[in-house]
Image (tube, rainbow, N blue to C red; front, side, top):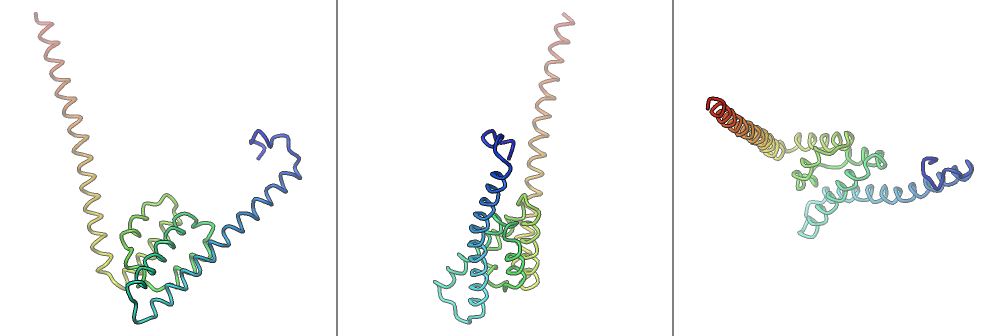
Length: 178
């Protein structure tokens, strides 16, 4: 905090108090996130145990899973305890509808988020391998095509520059001969 210009000359006691207030505020904010994540996990658990789910119930399940995914992506480290417990105990059925969104989060910059999403996808694969296999194969093929397209583009740029270099060399040689 001493690197902040306005706090450079502050007393140590004031800085300690300031940090304590900030930690309490953070704890208060994340306690609401923890409560909501826990409630979403309980909702998913209860809704998947129900045999009949109407259209409104399906929409609510999709909303709950997407909100949980948002909490995982944005606040995974702060909500680590509740997320680990909830993801380990939640049924896989509600997550099946957002498999594409789960795959897209495998590129997340935080290793913890990638690991949790990967574990969830593995659990889904155990219950319904056909839902995971197709997107995984398509993603692998698309990545291969993108890599090949990138390579083709780079190759064409080099070939163009080689052709221009050859033309320049030919014109230089012609000028030198004359």
